[in-house]
Length: 178
Image (cartoon, rainbow, N blue to C red; front, side, top):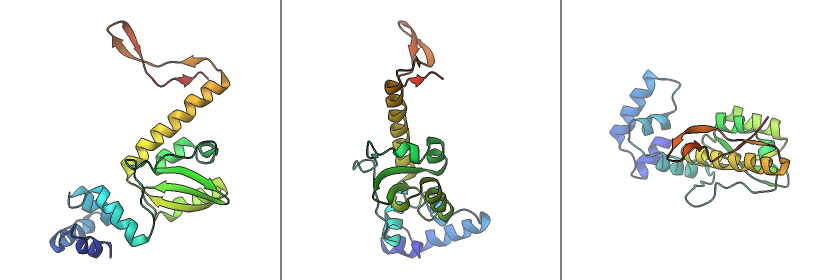
């Protein structure tokens, strides 16, 4: 069905769909969408937008500013950074009993079940490109770490990354000392 929708949108040809289906036979666990993207038939953005339409799940993008988690809701404590990175999931907001999360794969039922279990909230899904989610995870959890360091007034350890003109150059993102 998704292939047909991509064809209807003018993003894929019948020949490209057939070629992708043949490729999928060689790699049975590979999602068809990944194959479209890997073969260069469809961009990730076009694929995600089309998937959003098919599933009736809102599409959000970093460029439009919709991948910025709400502050002051303790979202980083609900979804730990390691879990967010491993699963390409970003907590965006908490409203009543619903946690809104951006997902690269909104059909991953195991992930959705795990999110419900670890957070204790009902999950409201939005879909985004994986690269946008990954970039937003970097920004969000970096900001949280820096904020935690300032609040704790813990000594700060800077990681050294090389030599600059004036000697040792420090990495800009400070990490609290353990």
